[in-house]
Image (cartoon, rainbow, N blue to C red; front, side, top):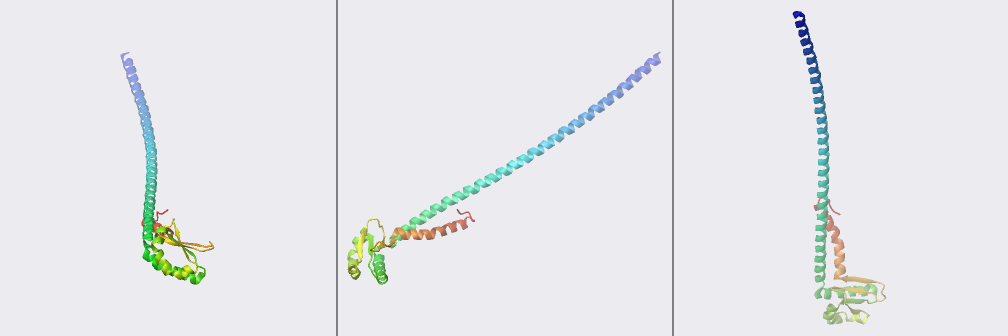
Length: 206
């Protein structure tokens, strides 16, 4: 009887150990599988986050570069406009100064002589009020023949420097004022200024 009981106890112990070992193996396998699943999910999520972060960083770099490029272009345009305005003022000042009394004394008799030879009829010669007042005596003497032929000297209150020539019938009006000549020079110089600025900026002009 004791032997049978001992055998029963031994069998129960063996069966229990085997069952416990099997259960432990099953639990271990399940745990390992779950661990692998978690690691794989974490790896996948990390990859997605890395890709997303890389894309965001790339977009940020591109946006920053575009903003910097636009800011540089805007700064260049502002600088160019300021240089152009300075050039316009310089041209206007120097052109106005170039039409001094000596230049008018030299140029106008030649212009009127050429006009009379080509046109026949004498035009009206318009000068600024101050210039005409100071040069009236000179032109009355120098252009005496032309004045007798119909040339008229007239003051122009809106004329700062230079002169204007108007045909008697009003069909033509030739503006050689300091302002008009400066505008013509500016129209010639400004595109070249733009080209120079654009070349200096590596083609970043307007």
